[in-house]
Length: 178
Image (cartoon, rainbow, N blue to C red; front, side, top):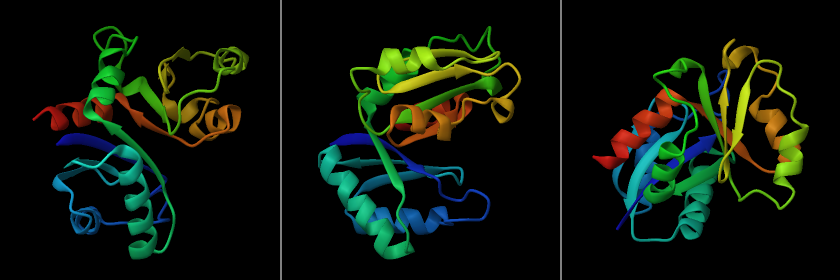
């Protein structure tokens, strides 16, 4: 049995593509997933399953489309990958304000030219670190003021991504461990 952390891309944003977390849990339960927990309304789900990530991603994508009538991006990480994302964060929350730390997770591994693409990003005040299938970012002026948004990163790398703040990353990590 593997514990997974699932980030849904773009639900409950600005009143669009709304899914109540209780309904989402029911959807996941209908797929035979167990120990389902959600965190806040932005599509963060933790669950256990014996299935592999590719199979789960396909089943979740189809179930959400059928039950809620729209497609969402599914970023699914086994707990071992999530622990690596959490433990390899380059910014110390004791030094850097955790409210200004974000992590952008990508659906697929970075392409070979990731370093070259990454070097073209010219942050004004942000500090960026390229991780394994993630970009860690410290935004001293707040994420709401950065020009390096989720949409910009998706366009640059040509693949689906979703961003979560450090408090969410930490909370999901702690929930998955327990």
